Amino acid sequence: MKGAWIIIANIEAKDGQAPEWILLFKEGWNEIEGEGKFLVDRQAYDIVAKNVSRRGNDVVFDYEHQTLKDVKAPASGWLKELRYDDKIGFMAKIDWTEEAAEYIAKNEYRYFSPVFFVSKSNKRVVDVHSVALTNTPKINHLHPLLAKLGANLQEEKDMDFLKKIIAKLGLAEDASEEKVMEAVVVLLDKEPVIKEKEVIAKDVLAALDLKDGDDTSVVVASIHALKQSEKGVVSKDEFDKLQARLQKRDADEIVAKALATGKITPDQIPWASEYAGRDLKGFEVFVTKAPVVMPLHKLPSHKDEVDANVLDEATQTVAKMMDVSAEDIKKYG
Image (cartoon, rainbow, N blue to C red; front, side, top):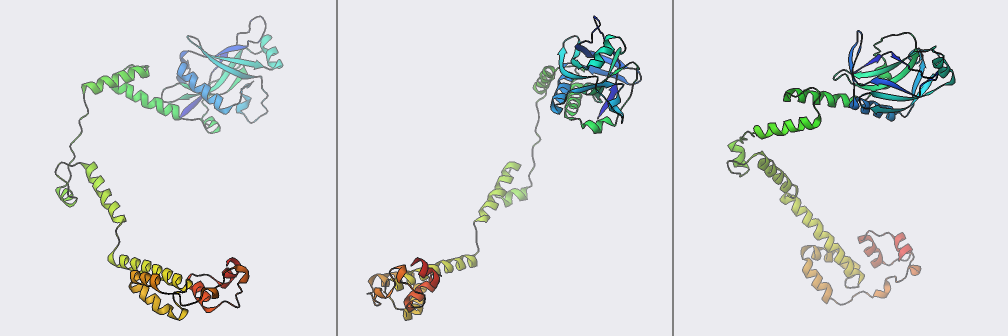
């Protein structure tokens, strides 16, 4: 979670002109009466700049925080650019409206007041909602703005985790990431990690044909191997059915071939199918040696000569065995 705060800061108008750059947030720890402290540093700037860039809109300067109210809220200027000056803080480049520049030049407005978000875990500034020209110092804690902006909390979570690590390592609160890594390396060198010996039940080891001392990794691998081998196993009944289907398919094909080449006649098909199904190799020898008993000229040789009404019996029989319709024969030959 983040809290939304408003502070009041002075506008230094030199030579009777509105300043182009203003110090938006002073570097270091700042304090708001009744609200606590907040931190401004390079890391805070990086988070704010990222959020402002993500939205892609200039941050508005208004009058008297009218943007926070349900009223007309004309701009007094626009925050066009941010930069961080070491030892100074957030600098903001402002494009003032003509009216606002005149107010400032005449010393009619002397203060500006940013509305910003602070991380509850580390108190860094993490986002800016708007800035107002004002002459009335106010301090408000505006929780509803959180839902309006939908701020990303990842930076806060990361920093909160790092803060816990820093505390566990006994380092200073502002320790850098490099210091944290150095401390972790030293700790690991002093106290090596001791892995507890895994204990696998003897019954499990015996069932998987493993030896005493094999760890969980070996057990899991063995189980996966068994599961993998089961994927390629079929029952004897399934194997017999599959073999029968394949044998029938081969038998049908060679019988159709024998009929198409004139080695058998249509009335021999039942005999040929039974013979091929029982002894495929023997029937293949028969087809090789048998003479042509049905003249081949009776079969159509060109699709233009084919007519579904005059197909001879042999052609119809072959077509039926090959799951080919009369229309297909007429169309393709």
